[in-house]
Image (cartoon, rainbow, N blue to C red; front, side):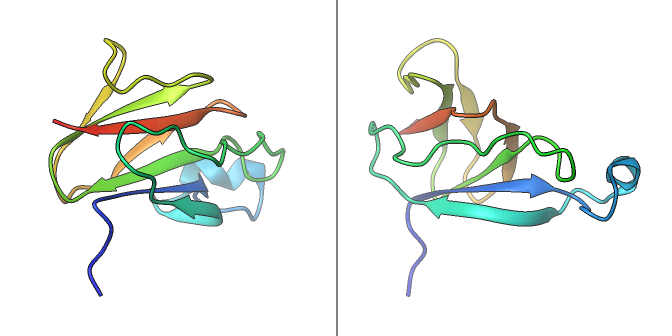
Amino acid sequence: MALPAFTVTCAYPGSSSASSARNLSQAILGKIVWQEAPSTGVASTNVAAEVSDIQGQAIFRVRAAADSWLSVGASPNSAGSVRVPIPANTDVDVYAEPGDKFMWQAA
């Protein structure tokens, strides 16, 4: 089964053992909240998770099959000027504010 053209995973980075240990964690996913693979130019249905006293701030981990653009915010616009380039077949982590959505567009 082939992977979708674009996937986003919302998760908390690093360890959840103690807030003081988070800064010692490796850059790996900790608690995964959700995963979504929407069509291009469509805002996500899921939103970024709330900041957690134990887990910290959520991230969007993004992976695309082809070079793409990502926009994150309350009303994301992947064709706008505020966006992040996502190189093909590369994981990119973007911190998200609670309630943020994302939208992507092929480059």
